[in-house]
Amino acid sequence: KAVVSTQSTGKERVLGGLLEEHSVSEQFKVLRAFRAVLFLSVEDLCTVRNVPRPMLLNHLFSRAGEALLSPYKVAGWTPSQYVAWLYSHPYEVVDMIQGTIQWYEDMIRESGAPSFDPIYPHIIQLLQS
Image (cartoon, rainbow, N blue to C red; front, side, top):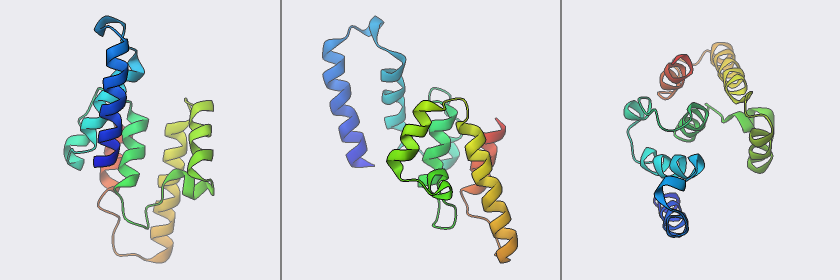
């Protein structure tokens, strides 16, 4: 978290010096808002409205335990393959995450595991919002 926050702050400083506030792009504003998300509780993270929902959903997977795999792992991709897919399929991200959750639910039922990952209900909440 600290490394990402520091890198984010550095990029913000460089870009901020090059851009006037009224010309700041949406991506820059999202980058700035996402830095704060890194330090929020999961409950608070689900109430964030200035960061795109797919970005929040993917971040929640990073906070989950080992059984709740990230979408790219379920697809059998590397992180860089997933990022390339995200850029080329921006309107399909939530569908892929829903497919990942369906896979996880099926896996839990089939294995007879006693409970779901504590992050699971928060992902469901965000998917339904």
